[in-house]
Amino acid sequence: MAPQRLVIISDLHLGGRPDAEGLLGTQICSSYRELTAFIDWLRASMPAEGLCELVINGDFVDLLAEDDPGMLPARAWTADEGEAVRKLERIVERTRAGAGRGPFEALHGFVA
Image (tube, rainbow, N blue to C red; front, side, top):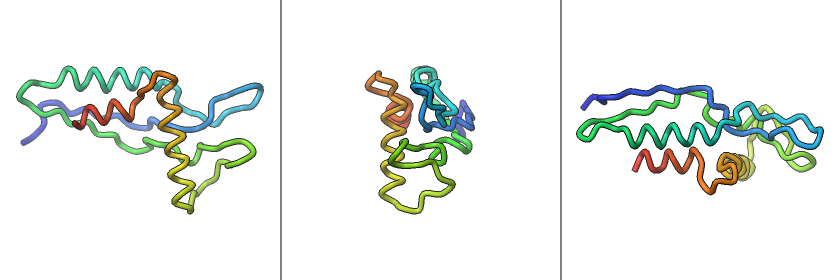
């Protein structure tokens, strides 16, 4: 069945360290609350009998920009699986923006 609503978003670049204490950050996107609210709205406004398809088209998570000063520098490639998982966990935590939930939790609700 074809979706009744098709929504395409791209180039979110979730990840990267925000500017802090005179240290220039690597973060491109900081609109986590707005993205979470958008996904929640999309879920709430789905047609009762129809389908809604959300396409996240490229550059969703920015592992290249994710670093931890003094411990984990930003690099062009993360070959170690454990390091990649730690980066993703940090990104998920940061995108919660102190709210307890963020875009990843909103996507979980959307898919459910």
